Amino acid sequence: MKKSLIFSLLTVCARNSALADNIQSRDTPVNWSVKALHNTVSHFHPNPEHYVDIVVETYDMITNVHNGEFIATPRELCAVYSVMTENIVQEPVSCYLLLEKLINEHNKEVKTKINKDIITQDDQEILWGLKALHETVSHFHPNPEHYVDIVAETYDMITNVHNGEFIATPREMYAVYSVMTENIAQEPVFYYLFIERLKESQKYYDEKN
Image 1 (cartoon, helix red, strand yellow):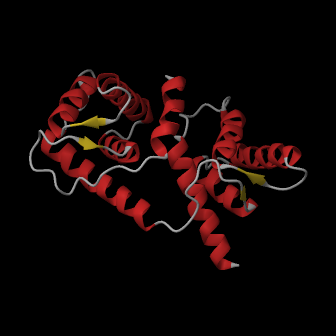
Image 2 (spheres, helix red, strand yellow):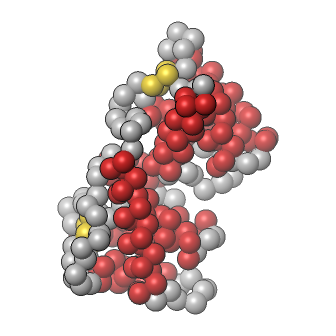
């Protein structure tokens, strides 16, 4: 797995993408949401051994052509996706179905960002709740033998650095989580997916209290 490329997604996660509502043709350039691509590809290719590589390699190919920007026309994105999936033993997904799902996911993601009233800065220090971390980690790692240790060790490392307080920026939280999970035989969880889940859990427990 291209860990360096996955890490480079961090810069994309903090940026807003334009709505895709006004696409007039397959040749309209769109600044796509990486999360939308992930949700779309994993929908059609539920096997993690497939969708992680497809997402990463599609992102890699498009950003290499567009000077680091994840911008492509629907036609171009379909062409790249077709190349990335040509060796997978599965019925091909039509361009129409792929784009229909991708545009829906993209617009949903952008509108969520617009309406979001919680943490927005990746480098903003947050006083996290242990329950929020537990809910997030157990969501991505349902095996108790994994999530119990991940939660405990992440909490321990953060509080050791911050004088007993469970304070960290989202980037720092993910960095520690990544270290705690690097030896687990499971596909890595994207920064964006992990932090969004953590933020939503934090918001839920804040409102509950």
